[in-house]
Image 1 (tube, rainbow, N blue to C red):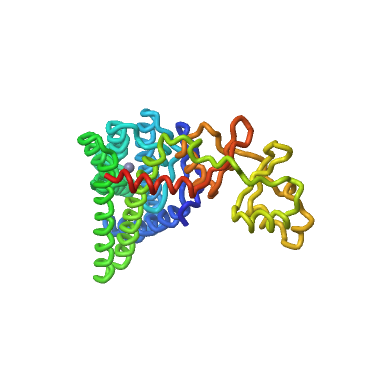
Image 2: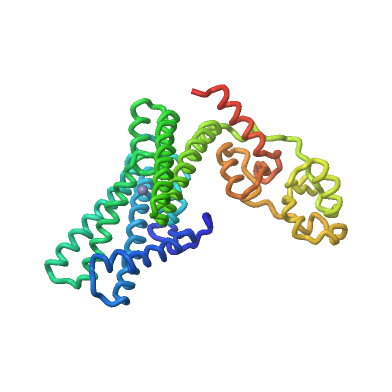
Length: 376
Ligand SMILES: [Zn+2]
């Protein structure tokens, strides 16, 4: 469910999308507003009005979350950080940042921008609801506005809990980072708080579940699980980033690469290369010229009884952004590329010429050595 994104639109140069899980949540929110909340506070309206209010409430919430994430993204961009896009998923929104903030101030301002936007939305909706009531706007309209004011207030309170990676946790991390000048220490403290808060939510979920409120129980439980996972992986990501940052790629390149000629059959490729050297990807070299690469994934797409007839040239992929990396790149770029493309090896090129290969295993070995030697 996670990770399957639907692109919606572009705004200010950011792509906005939703995770499929958000659609389910949107339906649940609409349903609980139309059947629960609105009929409880505003009695005696036709069912169709409640449904319209439910849809308006869910849409309003969607817009609120997008604005919240936009506030983060715009401020981050002001500090020169790259943002891949904004995705709404089951627990709200994420602005997908590609870089870590460069300094505590950038981190603090980026994190604070979201809650500030939500406070403004909440204030605007509540004032509009009040004025609307005085001015005699239809009750369903003011009720939806009041709901949006309330829910945005709730978003602010939740997001300000000082538990990384929630906004409050990021703000606290920025303050700690500023105090000691040690990002790793600040991240360790705030992700530990994130983990603990996640655990608290899980416990709350179990408690709600056994005391008869199954729906909220499941909700809190999942939210807690998610937060714990996010906190732990954020810390690990930082450790990896710190270990690899500034490490030149040249340090990891294995220059003597096993290459394959384009003319051999897939059968020979599998028997003489894949089963012998145990790699999933080989550079294809024709008379000292790198022409592409061949992967076990591509071989698998050819039925096995045709392996003796097809050649490497038939299935080789041309060199592309995805399977090659420039010798001048950073080790962290290589890791990011492997992660994005699910590859464990990349071809290292210098002006189109094969320089060697870089493997995930070697990157990981350096990370673990650094953690062992420099653990503070
Ligand atoms: Zn936020």
